[in-house]
Image (cartoon, rainbow, N blue to C red; front, side, top):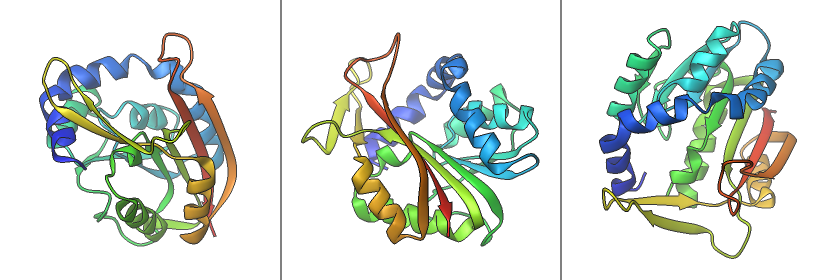
Length: 209
């Protein structure tokens, strides 16, 4: 993760997690799709799970969800907001998770902060390692809609830069296949009512072969 991106989340952890916690209704249908795919009592790792919102929803539906985030302050916010969610402070480029020990992985807006394609590939390698055969890897990233592949956005209040990477479905599906996954579903859509009209998201479900 870009150093200033990490610093931004460190400095804004409480404010950011409090804000996105209230956005759950916007993503509930997607989370229900994840739950339906992995089944009841599945073990799901929420990588880059920030304040634990999604993991808490999974657990409320009977899924054994675990929250993992690189930013310590995010994990503190998660414990304050959702103390029922187990939290691990770790980098998903080197997961502290046993081989083939989880039934599903949910990555909501986390791969988009990786600076290089090599880091994206390392993350996919780690996700493949910890997933059981037939397990589902769900990921959601910002879609590439033009020629721009990466961008640095400066926060007007803090002055910090945040790095973003955009992906096309063709690019991600190819990378997933190369790393042992089979894509079974995808959807690309605009951010929607109340969101940024210029932003599109890409949601993909893939299965470990």
